[in-house]
Structures are given as C-alpha cells and as structure tokens.
Image 1 (tube, rainbow over the protein chains, first blue to last red):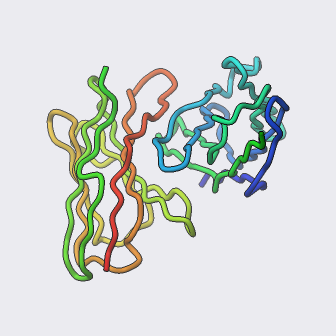
Image 2 (cartoon, chains in turn orange, green):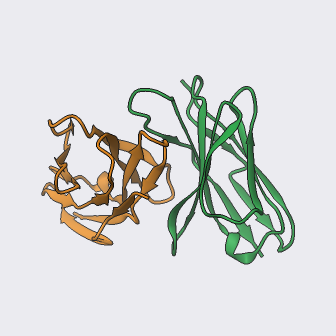
Amino acid sequence: AQTVTQSQPEMSVQEAETVTLSCTYDTSESDYYLFWYKQPPSRQMILVIRQEAYKQQNATENRFSVNFQKAAKSFSLKISDSQLGDAAMYFCAYRSLNNNDMRFGAGTRLTVKP
Amino acid sequence: KAGVTQTPRYLIKTRGQQVTLSCSPISGHRSVSWYQQTPGQGLQFLFEYFSETQRNKGNFPGRFSGRQFSNSRSEMNVSTLELGDSALYLCASSQDRGYYEQYFGPGTRLTVT
C-alpha cells in the first residue's frame, strides 16, 4: 500500500519569506496524482496545488509551487512571499489511479510570524 | 456551484448510542469519501462510495458503515459509540475523471461522552 510521509510536524516562516514543506511517498505505481491541501485553524480543508506523475513540469499556482522528483518520490511545496493567511496545517496526499485510493500524510503545521 | 455540505456540524452523543452523519457532494460529483480526523491519528480514510457502491474501505471496525443514494448524497453511521470515536468527520467529493482531486466539506465534529 502507498504511504505518504511528511517529516516536518511543524514549520515556521517569517512573513514575506519563503518556506518549503517536505513530502515523500512510497509507491510501485507509475502513474498517480499528488496534491497539497491546506487546513486553516477551525476551517475547511482546501486544495492548494496538484500534480500528475507523468508530467515532468512542476505545478505552480500563484505563490505556491512544487518540486516534484519522481525518481526520488518526493513532492515538496514551496510557498513564496508567505502571508499571515498561509498559517495552517498542510497535508500532502497521493491518489492511486489503480484503485482510486487516496492517502494523506500526517500534516505539517505552518506558523507565519509577522 | 455549491460546495460539499455536511450535516450536522456539531454533535454530542453518549457512549453506546449510534449516530448518522450526512454529506451532500458537489453537483456532478459521483464519488464521496469519508475521513476521520483526530489530533493523534491524523486523517484516516474510512470508505469511498461511487455510484451507490462502496469502492474502497479503510481499516475501521464494522461499527462504521455508510451508504450512498442515487443522487450521490452519502451517509455514514457509527453504532455503539465509543469515547475514541470523538473526532472531526470529513466528507470529500470528487469527479471520476481529470485529476480526481477531492473537495472537502466543513466536517462534523462528533463528541462522545
């Protein structure tokens, strides 16, 4: 079964700075999807960014970008120009195309300091 | 489009009781997944329904069950509640094509006393 590992339980960044959240996964599949979700305190989980495994180009959504290293099975999230509203729990997720299984990492709590 | 809705938002039950939670997916989404979120265990997958059929199931006891209706709305039921069932229960819907990304509802906060 696929596993998703987020090795940083907590991260902190100064406002306007850049931070990178790590995610690794284990799979024997060649095609799959990867996602980063954000869950602000007491608020709804929302999709931040997504990546198809067969696409080599890293996905970008405004200030959010990923560094997808398929061979290394790594999928890190970079947040540029961090804002106070970026403070949240961030989850990395893997979606299998074989069985539609969706796996989440344990999450990284990001604090943004003014 | 309206987002995923879950009812009720908060619930307090007593040990031994049963509870039913409801989820209405985004219009056009036929897949509905349920997750249990707790501080200690994180986000754990309960089950996924697609076209009224359970397609995937997580590692939870049989006290946890679900169903999906023809309009894609889904319910999950927990029988014989235990203190450890206290959690935020999240529902997520997705299309069965494209990126298959899931869109989450606000969750139902269940407290078992």
